[in-house]
Image: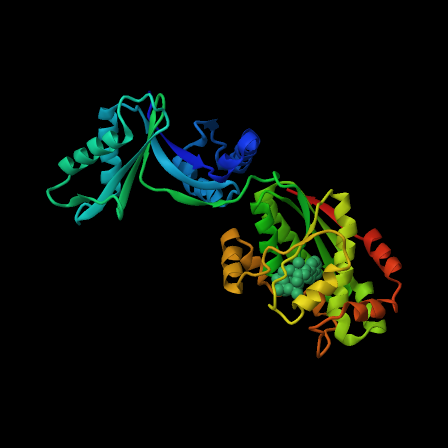
Length: 393
Ligand code: ATP
Ligand code: MG
């Protein structure tokens, strides 16, 4: 057989999905092909409970970055694919080990063998023992020692029916489930750090995320929209086709400023946003709303305020960041590449007409009473009619 390097892609959680397994595997297969199209479009095959991607050294780093973040991948390895007879395994095993080993210092190692094909004439432990002995023989005296529990180098050997795959490193994927296996949701996307991460968390669990952005162009110009458009494009890189709906929000904010209690403004803005988002989400067959809200992160996000907003919609509101710490959220934003865009200066509409003392313990009756000063239905209808939806991905 011709020997090649290949990526082994593992998908632990999908394997648990019983009767649906083939469906999830096909979805992941399709996602990988789509994402790697720009990396020389390598062949991707699905066998033996794994996906195999042809390696092209020219695109290696690019492929690695894609595999790190593609939802549904538990881990992956760049492996050498060779014949599975013991002599070949010894030769290749030693070469691969030697290349990675800083041969000038003592090193603990182990061999981990897994037989996907149980008809192989040797047991996994026997293969490990033979290979281990071979490595000890080849290395200068005393430099290598076996440690099953705390190895510094672990040579993995996977034995399949007509080939073996040998590698040293297992790289972590992002986990989760393949794109689009979880249904559609509508994310209220601002230009901040949080909501793109919230969208990403839903994408990671297999949801298709559409976006809605409320825009105060009259007072703030187009800067925030430009940011949100770029953020949703960055997210489309992961999830493929999606939409961004921009809803003009200036008239609603002016009406609230002119007719309602100043301290209620932020909660009232949110109530309008939620209700409008709920109406728009039906067009995209979404099953719920998503926000980047997080308990207590800012004064407006208390449990009382969240409840006063929640109550205005029937749709479930998913808040994947609700209990996460800001540092963790920032960490994810950096990993998925949205952080740099999010921190660009461009004020959000929520900052317009901010009162000195915003309500932090909103009462539902007080919000409802304040809204009787507004023609809620007409304001919402006009905003929806003036909304602009673009396709992405
Ligand atoms: P983010 O970083 O996502 O902006 P934040 O910490 O700034 O969040 P808020 O500004 O209070 O928090 O917004 C809370 C949530 O409300 C956001 O995560 C987002 O889901 C939604 N939201 C806020 N402003 C807008 C907007 N202009 N358009 C769409 N959604 C918005
Ligand atoms: Mg914000």
